Length: 470
Image (cartoon, rainbow, N blue to C red; front, side):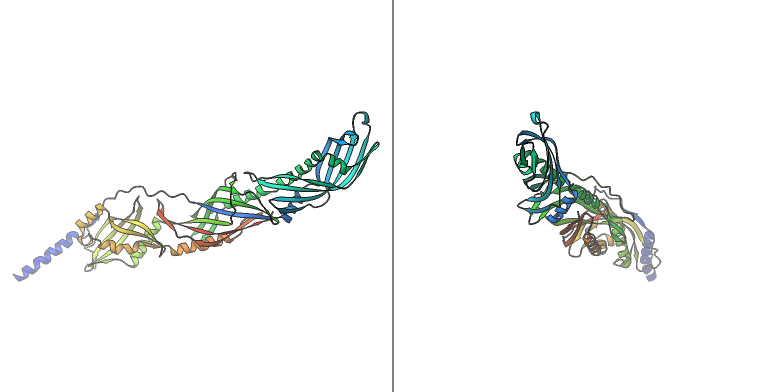
């Protein structure tokens, strides 16, 4: 009789376990709203002041200035016997010099003059020739157009040595002839200087630099990663002239992101835009660097952590077979398939397996530089199913055990990106205008999640060093 009383509970328990043996369950998929939109890469800024010493500017001006700097044909002028006609050629006889002060360029240029003078009317048979040496002293104010063309407004004076011209009974000299006709004779000379200064190759050099910024830069080998920039806006200051230099500040607004792929990404450059006005000069940059942890990679990391340290709940071993992270509008869904197996069941006969859905809020731990899914809880349908199937998991025990495995350390990834960005920016880029940058600090990352993964963005700030090699 006693044996019968003992055997009945055992048989009943065994029957219940056999009823649960191989039990499978699957919660209905939860409702999800669209995840936050992928933010457009923020505009980053890069500005640099290009300085050109006046001796280099003088060399450029000499190289681009033809020796014939002014030429007049049949120009009506005043002469000693009334009105005459003048043919004149002015040729540069040596290198010009350039100084800069008080917001303008001072140009000194030696030249020679060959003049042919003739009369009309009664004295049309009279002709004369003469030569002279002179120096043009010009003052040019500079401006830059939105198309990056230099514009000048040159005025000045001319000093000529006396060179006699005999025209019949009248003897005059070139210096007097020039002084009497200053406006008509000097203006072609100033126009010639304006033309030469405006031809200095600023726009082609900046266009080359603009196109260079579109070339993706490899910043990592494993995995192969590329820094891709999309310049959008260009700004320029008016020239700063003084103390022996001409300075021009350029500002470029770019959007940047990191692409992970083996082949260099295609990043078609856009034409150089019209430059906006830049009110203050600067030699600084602020550059935003994105770090994307895909949901697949995060799920893989979670599964690796779970395999190393499988949860133990009461008298059950929990074995996770699958884990996915699915984005939603206010949170993310953790879809996981697992088996709960009693410790006393060495053969897994009484394991119960199924798929449930948990919800949690992605956050960024600035102290640890880690992404974590916090506030983990059952989706409503999953909570009811677990309660019916396994009371031992119905509370917060499973969440407490799973929570530590949903922390993704990105400290090394951020450190590696910072090192790579610092190295890439320090390398001078460009030939005619070479720019390198020194990173001074990185800001704390901002954080969100998108349809593609967890997104942390941090800004690098520093100074720019431009070198002009015109």
